[in-house]
Length: 231
Ligand code: SAH
Image (cartoon, rainbow, N blue to C red; front, top):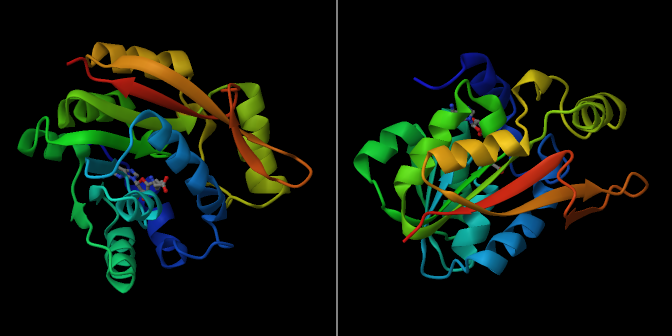
């Protein structure tokens, strides 16, 4: 299977902290409203069937469900899924969480989703291109696929690993492995090879002084790619 045990363990060890806005996943909490707004600017989610690949504790899944989407979240981390299910239950949200790989679900529900999201997950997987391919299979013709990951260059190494993990300490040490980062051109190439049309890139910029985030056209570090499956 397309998974690395050491990667899953990192996330399993921190699973109880998924919903702590100041815990190890603080950066994702901060990023969440920005990415939701960006997704909705391209593909409004109300009444849409949405798949969240590598959903973790369900930060994105819940935000999309709150906006009226019918959400399925998948991950290979059992503890994350337990936390996600419980949190949704407590909040009265109905979300389908499943322990499944994207490739597995692609065999079961090809074309079954209007929108597929796969955020901050590809850089933890041995064969990210295979996940991109599965996402392309899972989305219906005319639907959207949104990816996000980290760029592979010196600046991303300096900011995402040295800065965020070792200096500021806002991301736990060892979370990211620079060699697994993905250049925008590589991600767009995998998307095209899978039959998707890359439509828009956005990048995350963090103000070094107050650590406030905003999305911009700068894809040097953390970035997003929106793709469409042709109708
Ligand atoms: N997408 C979420 C969580 C990102 S953290 C968000 O942005 O809020 C990365 C997640 O990917 C973790 O929950 C981890 O368990 C999951 N993951 C790592 N390797 C995976 C794989 N091969 N298949 C599915 N999920 C995986």
